[in-house]
Length: 152
Ligand SMILES: [Cu+2]
Image (cartoon, rainbow, N blue to C red; front, side, top):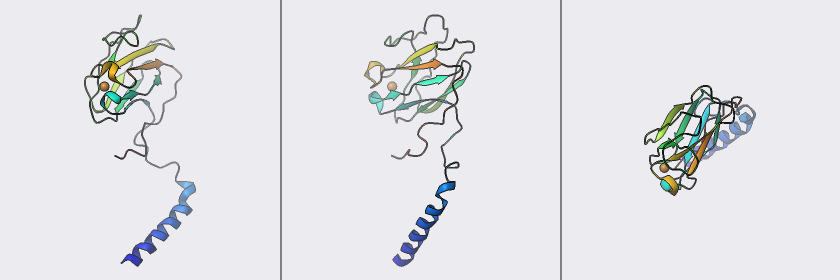
């Protein structure tokens, strides 16, 4: 019994060594390229990834935390009250969520527009209490976050 397992292990290692060059394109990344805002950490220790996306694009929010967060627009970083920056009417609020949520950006925002946001559940207690979506109309889609190693 144990001999068979050893033999299998050896041939599997050989196969892996031979196939190494061809494995780069197909390894599972979990989703198509897009515009991703990821929330990582744990509760009040969470932080947000910066995201650059074109006006009118859909941003996919990925909450990798076990607890819910609620992403709400603010007029300026540090306000911690709902609002939107001068000249931008986009007071978004995701509601409390875990997992994945999408947010469609308004069309017609100028290049370089910054949309600050915060988590209305944890506010200043987050490790990174403020995040921002930056409008970059030439921003290319990015691969989804946390491709391989999502183990607990
Ligand atoms: Cu939060």
